[in-house]
Amino acid sequence: MDEQQLKVLKPELDQFLDHYTPLFGHDGNQAHARRFVQGLLRGGDRRNAENIAEALDGGPARSLQAFVTTGAWKDAGVLAPLRLQVLDVLGDAGAVWNSDETGFPKKGASRSGSSASTRAPWGRTDNCQVAVFANYCSAKGHTFVDRRLFLPEDGAADPVRRKEAGVPDEVIFRTKPALALEMLADPVPAGVPFRWAGGDCVYGDNPTFVQGVRARGKWYVLDVSSGTQVWTEAPRVIPADQRPRPARGRPPTKPLVVGGRRRVDEIAAALPAGAWRRVVAGEGSQGPRMCEYAEVPVWFCEDELPGPTERLLVRRSLGQEPDIKYHRSNAPAEASLEKSARVRWVRWTIEEDIQSCKGECGLDEYETRGWVGWHHHTALSVLALAFLVLRKQPLGEKRTPDDRTRSACAAAPVGRASLGRGRDPEMVSVATGAQPPRRPQSPQAAPRRTRTAPK
View 1 (cartoon, one colour):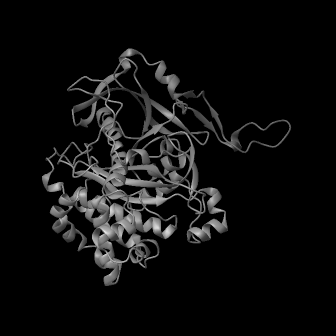
View 2: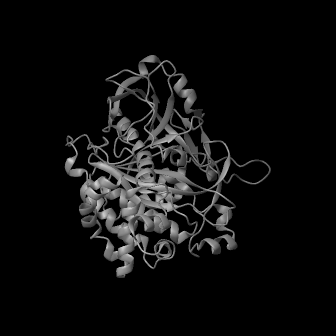
View 3: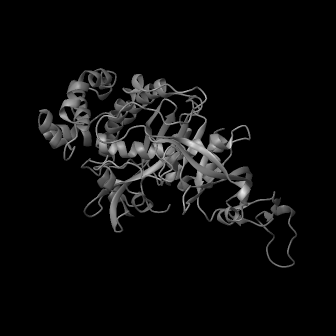
């Protein structure tokens, strides 16, 4: 966002921040919060405390830096009311709760307990801080609602690194799916409206995450790996105490599953031509996005035991060299294949939110590896992104009530990144029939997008 755009939006931004500045404590902290959010939105070469203080005449840079790194204010106390405002505007009973992770490359030796060595997309291994994000997507728009910093297992067990990073004693090692489930589970008892959960194979391949979503009464469309094993016919499970005892050795301690398993890619390869249906999975900037889907009732293998009956969804892109993806869904028959395809499509909104928050709101431009500093900086960035998303709602085009999983926010975006325009690069636009377009990349945000190593 350039200087002129920020000047035009300043009255709206001040009014938005009026609801939150009291949560930062004393008057000095409140002034710092306003300056920092304004500086994040202003852009520039580097949105750190020094540059923001210089650009906005925000007083000594050291004071602004201390506000972020060690300030006596609670990020959770800011994000909780922000979620309420987001839900008040975007809330919908048919919304999708998406989970995804991203990396924040940090140069130099890893000293922080919250750092991990991660192979970056450009091929080398870098020191990264990794976080799991959750976004809320309804027909009215989408934005972040929560995030968790991932503490790698070696860092969690290293008291020196923990002390250097200021990691609280109560924080223990948690996998990325565990962090995602924690974020999804927290709002369920409070009645936060959403019907679906979405995520890539990091989450779809994790039985604990899948079972946790299921236990909370939510439907999901989650990616799974090509090697995922399933039963295509109902398997029979013989409890351990009912298995025949061997003549020698110890009695069985695990149940026996009778029935052969198959890989999902083998099932997809054997599907007849008539099994595929062409569906419109979502709305893109160039018109409806079309692909082909097939579905098979299966029992997914969860910790070597069969789960409940689910739907294996196989998606095939259009084109001479189709790309095939695999998903699992527990949605009942009343949820059509088209509906499930649309839910899967809006998973890209969290990718867009990561890109937008990095490009528009300086999410990855912090200069601290400390636990408190990371949480403070990202909370301010999420606050800035929510402002950009929520301010567009009066300008967004109306949606039909039953189209609950389309990506909204149709108003023209402010600044570099595209906010709220879902584009799945593996689908083809019906309007043009062209080859799948690449997802738009922010020139500043794209190089920083980091996929993490396998869990």
